[in-house]
Amino acid sequence: DNRVAVEAALDEAVVSRVPETDLLAESMRYSLMAGGKRIRPVLVLAAAKMFGGEEAMGKAMPAAVAVEMIHTMSLIHDDLPSMDNDDFRRGKPTNHKVYGENIAILAGDAMLSQAFEHVAKHCDDSDPARVVKVLALLGEAVGVEGLAGGQVMDLLSEADPNVDIERLTWIHKHKTACLLRISVAAGALLGGATADDVARVSEFAVKIGLAFQIADDVLDVTMDTETLGKTAGKDLLAEKATFPKFLGLDESKRRAKQLTEEAKALLEPYGDRAENLLALADFIIQRTN
Image (cartoon, rainbow, N blue to C red; front, side):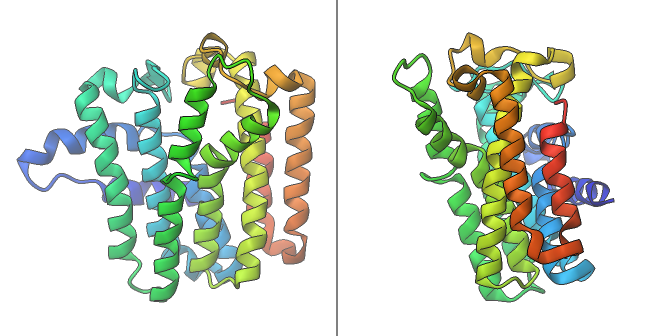
């Protein structure tokens, strides 16, 4: 099971080696090892396997760990009072509620830095040119046209009556879909994919990334806090722009399904080799948290 392998790799990735780093490592591990769906690292491994077989999955594991570290950093920082101000994540108190804002910020910073370090140190059995491309992708994922840029626009759009569906789509192509795209592209690269293949699977990932966000917005208004593992109805209270707000629940569900079908069609040339990526696409809109 890929998730079991991912959990073991994550567990080994953050370890305190001297007493002075015990608190920081504990804070990092608190969020990194809090469970979750592990969609992003599993996408890395599925894409690597599609192009390079079982052997490529081992080569891609450092990148799988790195994208989950980046994702976890984004959750720690998103939950801060100055951002989304949330008290719960994955059914547990958020990092800053346990360790304080100062340690939570530094835990996120350390996690981000360690993501790049992990790939640079542990992808030594892969083509160096491909590893450099993966490192560039990871930088893109968190930069001005990635998580950071998407989060800024998300914050600026709260309670803004001029927000439209185009801006909302831009936000989530960069805040949500970007890291899914980088996950698939990194796995494909380390699996030996051609540039055309990387472009095709990247387009697949953007579509499932938007479907993922639409599903997330729907769950926020249809599920309770216990089921979600985070505060339900938070988007409504914060007056955030969401897909159900613009489209309604039924049209949002239809749009998510349509995006998923379009994404799956992009993988038709790969036949049975794409089965794991196809299964992940279905999971994204069928999940309940």
